Image (cartoon, rainbow, N blue to C red; front, side):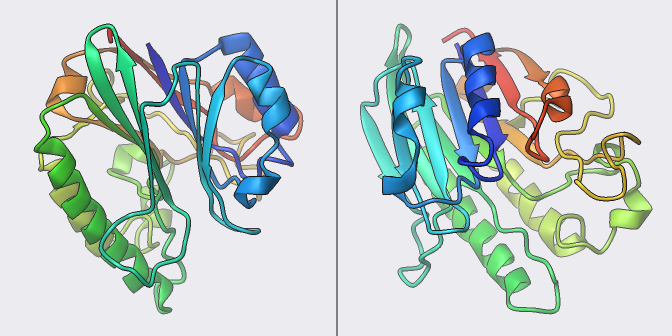
Length: 259
C-alpha cells in the first residue's frame, strides 16, 4: 500500500497538477494539506473519476485538510481534541480495512508559528502538546497508525540547506524541537529517516530562486507507530513534481507499506 502526504497550497490552484500526479502514480491514500476551501467548494468530481473516495475538513481561504483514498473509509474523525475554541481545520483521520486488518491514517497541518513574537507561536506549541496527547491515545490502540502531513518543523540540521539561516524560526528553534522530540519519543518512527541519513528536502520557497538553488527544507513527515514501522518498505520524495508547471512549494512524500 502506498500512502502519501502533500501540502497542495490551494486545491483549486493546483488541481491540474494533482490530477496529473494521481493519474501517473495512483497512490492508494493521499493526504492533502492547505486545501484552502470549505468542504462544499472542494473539486470532487474529477478526483472521484480517478476512483478516489474523498473526505475533507475545510476552511474558507486558509488551512484545510483532505484524504483521498482508493480504499473505502470505515471511520472518519475531524479536528484535534483538547481545545473547544480552536476552529482551525488542521486534522482529519481515516480508518481503513486492509488484508492485514485495520490501519489508521491521521493527516495534520501543524501551525507554522511565525512570527514568533505573536500569538501564533504559543498557538503552535499548544497545538503540538495537544497532538502529543492525542497521539498517545492512538498508540495505546496498538494498531498500525500513520501520522503524516506538513509538520512545519525541521527536525535536524541535515533537514535544511542552511541550518544557521533557519535557526530561530518557528520551524527550527528549541521550543518547537523539544515538543517534536516529546512526540517522537512516544514511540514514533520517522519513516524517511528510517530509510536514509542523506539530506532530503520536501519544500522549496517560491522566493529567491530556492528551487533552482536546491535551497530546501524537510518539513513534511510520515511518523509511524511500531505496528506501521514494522510494515514500512520504503519512502519516495517526489521531488520532480516541484519542477512541473504551476506547482505547490511542497512535493508529495510517499511511504510504501506491506499492509
